[in-house]
Length: 355
Image (tube, rainbow, N blue to C red):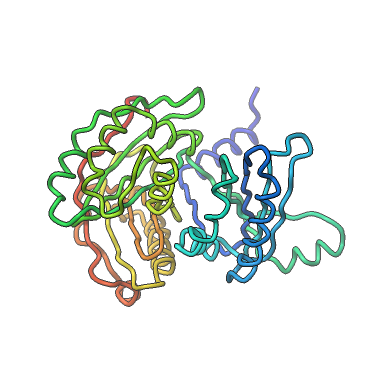
């Protein structure tokens, strides 16, 4: 039999779950875990490359410490953990061209990697550790998620080719949504403005598994091959290194998401905010603050908002009830913009039947 206190607790949980907020901007410490699978026989080469890399990373603003660990069971499995003052400086570095060049020596000895990022919520230890923890910024409370992982890719095509590219991207056959027993593709939204393309995906389960699943689908591969001649950044999908470099540079990570009503459907829009050089992260943070304030206002038309950012490219994906109206830009945002904020053209928006 359910007690009154249990019913109240369950009700409170449901009420909290209606409001979903995930953000890199809470100021708490960041722990990054990198799982590395090294080719057999390349362990010494990997160690030497890491030692050179470690000296460079130590000078990156916001970096606190690193540890390199090797499995006691499988010498090919390595673990790199690093601590950062907060998420923004890490993301600014890991998404930069400097990072792309810095990790290049590792490619020849690494078979696969998997990166996981965590805000530090609590720390335990002895008295000295406790005193240090008190000085560190910890995440104040657990965030409530909605079980959906969000990611985007962005790239540019040659000016003049936009109509042909839009037609190719609109006409593709949707891939199989089921990845495995725990992972499904939920939604893919594709937008263009000028020669910039943004493809946002939503996944339940394992994002990396979903991305790999999509890349292997014949219908997706055919579309990628069809747009190859129009890309400003050349790539060869049959060359693993060429494909990896392209998708590394195209990655547009989600840095903030807020949902006010997960049940109500809305009209989807993508807004592109070109940032002044070096101001992309700050611009994304201001947009996140605006969206958090809007989530508290019952009159706001915004149902869901996700902010994607890499370098000076900032894209805000919003679901609204009714018409979005003009793109809202405050004086603070204007000071960070390198041009006008614009609404992108929707090319295709596809949901899985049971998403």
